[in-house]
Image (cartoon, rainbow over all chains, first blue to last red; front, side, top):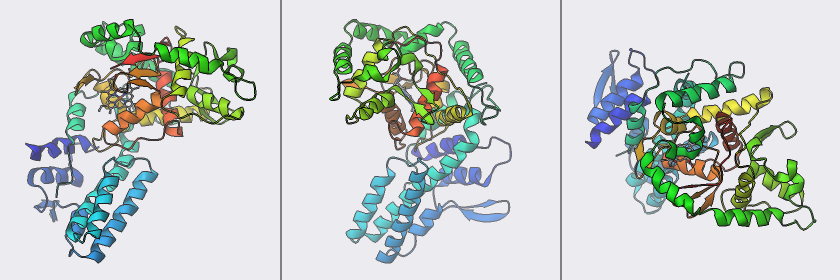
Length: 140
Length: 286
């Protein structure tokens, strides 16, 4: 059941209601159906259903990579905070990433940092998307 | 790795009620027209709930939901905010260390003026809410600021609202700078936020009267008339911006600062939408 929820979300999230499906629509639909790590084609090109952050977290799990991913997640978090669109869970996830790093659990640290970075990137996207689309919500 | 968690609420609500006709202008200083916005919002609610009198919107969700209204009317028989009004009156009338008092900072000695807040201040180049004015009055007289969300500021605000009972909300957007603030508030109201990706309008306009956990979402028309509110869940009185923060947290978005520019602009927009409705604060809510 849970697996299909993001599909509904993806439908609602896509800002364009026009017939032509954007890459984002296709990506979201494929991801909702198949989860990550699934290959699909869009306009003749091959893609996978991984978020960029997930690919980053798939790098070798070591202290250097974990530190780097946490740092870039923090930078993205600062960006989303600056526009006032950060999500509530992100800060705690970042904290847990740092804890895992300290404990030497590099893979966990990288997974958490990737999740936080994804949240933050989505928040920034939401900010830009809102600017484009809020008017659609106003009754006439 | 599970990255997306529970988008469900947002998705479900947004799907329930699509807009039949959305505005295509009103997102620039040149085209934004507060009065047209207000009339369109009223028309939207009147079309959806033709049996509800306009004046009843000041009663929030209880205007739409008969079941919870009965409970609420019982609650209002012994209003939980009565003590706060008395306390607020005393605070209001207690002179500052320099001998002056709140009455010196407001028109008409601060009595019966709630309906004019928030207003665009030419001098300060910003929207001034009642709570901001209360704290400005304090600092101008050498007193410390009060916290924004509850306690004394809410009590003083409650007393001032109480002395304005029945006055009709009368917000003005006098010039282009005020229009810009109004437009910012309007954009905020309709912008999706948080991990659940929902806007205020998703719940309080299109999604109005939808059950969410133990609550039903009330209409945004009349949202501001009865603040501050004694909320059973808080067990105390709270200001409008406290409630804004709670709603933003509920969609897993980080709340913005109480009395920051964003919330003041949001209040400016929301108050304009309720122009013509009577002040009936303080109120009580579940």
